[in-house]
Length: 273
Image 1 (spheres, one colour):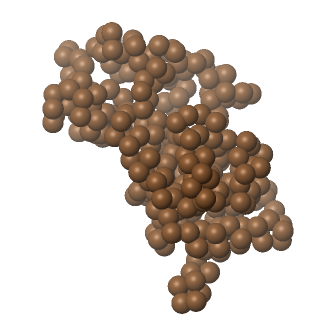
Image 2 (cartoon, one colour):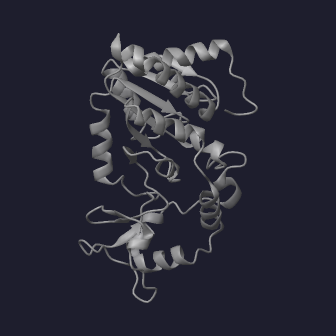
């Protein structure tokens, strides 16, 4: 747990209440955002100290540029010159999963958490061990075929600098980075999987996001429309705070670690009660 965060009895009681909601639900899905990654040393993109504030924003027409000249886009990927690209690569490459990511894996392992939808591209959920993971904006460490949408580890794709762009070994489609660029549609396979995960969800755990960017912002609203509950974990109030069943204020790592503790402690009682 964070050395600087003091868990008050009142907050611990709220976390215990949230654990009870999780255990009573039949289908729990998580939605995570950039706030969870801050504790891994990844700043938000915008605002003071943000990655884009420091290094500059990526081109707003990045996807259109890729479509116009995939070979040139790949040359830039292999030898990035833009400061924003270098800054992003260095920052994400140094980051490691934090207690929040690990606690969510724990919730998955004890059968409480059915799926995690993340808006983050930092690969930290995957590194932590999440199995049922939906990366709606892609993963900076993966490649994706534009035709069949198969994802690949970069080591699986032969990249010849003299024959760019590389092609999918399955369908021969053009391969690009998995991160969804400005102007690029959400890959249809992951979008369908997200909606399928949310269908029937009666409790959503929303961590480190204000959930204002669509289509992800639609998921908590869909749960509410279906009569489900929301558990918010965020250091700050958001637009979801007024409609959340429980709103837990504090760092994601400390809160989620304690949430897992309460869920584990209650499980035997819930299972036999």
